[in-house]
Each structure stands twice: as C-alpha cells, then as structure tokens.
Image (tube, rainbow, N blue to C red):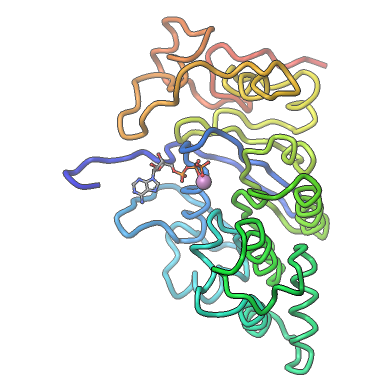
Length: 299
Ligand SMILES: Nc1ncnc2c1ncn2[C@@H]1O[C@H](COP(=O)(O)OP(=O)(O)OP(=O)(O)O)[C@@H](O)[C@H]1O
Ligand code: NI
C-alpha cells in the first residue's frame, strides 16, 4: 500500500481439497476469503505479495507465470464464480455470446451445436433462456450471478472456486445453485465454496473452514461442525450462535483492521474465554487455532 503500509489480507491458510469434495470457507466480511481465491487464480493486484505454495496437478499457482495461468489454469484447471459478476462479465457482449465463446474456448463442442450447448449451460445455472440476448447491465444482480455461474461451470475444471455464488438469490434458487455446484463435486471435482450463507454451507459442504482476520482458525467436518459436537473455535461458535434459527446473538465488537493486527490471537478482544495466554498467536493444530478451543470428543 502507499507509504510502505502492509495489509495482511491472508496470513495463515493451510488446507487440502480432494476430488469429489466440497470445502466451505466462511467468515465475516473482510476476513480475506476473496483474496485467498484471487491468489489461487493469479488475480491479485500487482502490488500484492504471496508466500507459500498452492499446488494443483503439480503446478504451483502462487509462482506460475501469467502464460501458464492464462493457458492452462484459469477456466481449465481452476474455475471461478466471481463475487462481483457485474465486474467480471464483459459489458459489451450478450450473455449468449459469452457462453458460446467460453464453450468454444474450453470444450470441443462442434460449431453447429454451440447454440444448443449455450442454452443448456444457461439452464444448468438456472439462468432464464429468455434473457440470453441481454447485456450484463440489463440483468439483475441475481441474474448476473447465475450467468457467471453458468460460465464457470462450462470448463468442468477439476477445482471450482465459487465466491458467494448465491448472493441475491431467493431460497429456492439458492438451493438449486447449491445442488448444481454439489453435482459438480460429486462428478469427481473439488469445490471451494465461499459463503456467508451458513445454511447453504451446511447443505453442500463436506468440511468447513472458518477464517478470521486473514487466518483459517478452524477446519472441521461439516457434520460435526453444524451438528454434534459443534464448532471448536469460540469465533466459529459465535458465528453459528448468531443465526436467527439458533440463539440470534451476535458476536460483540468488530474484527480488527488487517493493516494493524493485534499481537497474539486476533479474536481475543471479542472472546469471552480470552486470558493471558491469548497474548501469543495460537498455533493451528488438530484443526483449530485457539488456546481454549472446545475439546475434541474422543471416541
Ligand atoms: N486491492 C486491495 N488493496 C488493499 N487491500 C485490499 C485489497 N483487496 C482487499 N483488500 C483487503 O483485504 C481484506 C480481505 O478482503 P477480501 O475481499 O478477501 O474479504 P472477504 O472475506 O472476501 O470479504 P467479503 O465477505 O466482504 O467478500 C480486506 O480487509 C480488504 O480491505
Ligand atoms: Ni469476498
């Protein structure tokens, strides 16, 4: 940033994803979810610095050159449902033109079959066929979202990053979209789904990663996270307790500025379990980064 300032947008994220699996990445606005997704696609701003590794098919996504990323990664190995479809769709071309172009680039669909394939691709994401000849600015937010999802599904990439793919959709459309994304995983591909919608996460995910202030602080099996014994990190417990259908009790306070993270545990200031030990950053161990996490239930 200007003045030599740094923002630690993502400072600790370690996870794997296997074919056929869906990992839901959740956490408060601004915690670093989209930056993580952008890093995996080589789409960070030019002044961003990365460290570590992120491997798919032997390619390190964090160090791969632009040519490799453009020719073999984006759309082909790693698909993206962008968080802001309005900013990603080409404004001067209709949805149909963009679907057909993507089909031409990423599939072997014969020319004569492109039109029908574009309609089928739209239907897969519940995009209304009647709107295919609309330009992006002629779509509602939820319609643009579905157009972006349709485009992202075309390449059948082994890893799909879906960044808030259900924003602006009504519940039945949320469920349809989530089920379509789940099918993508069930076909033997991996899905990283970023979402604020914990109900959608519960519906789709095999595992849940919880991010707070740029770090993954918990990584759990979804059935244990949403069911018994529940989350283990106090922040994750707070996220669930905030749901209207649970306690409807928000977590007090606000997340810290990522440009000025406190020493020690970033959640301590909001945590009712915090004590002196929280002055040291908790290591991520056994699926959780907390000095006072809930015990794992032993078999
Ligand atoms: N280009 C940028 N320059 C500087 N800081 C940035 C930039 N992009 C993102 N950030 C900062 O990085 C942090 C993480 O942003 P990110 O978009 O990943 O959040 P998010 O978890 O996806 O939030 P949301 O749920 O609102 O989409 C934010 O604090 C943001 O201010
Ligand atoms: Ni985001």
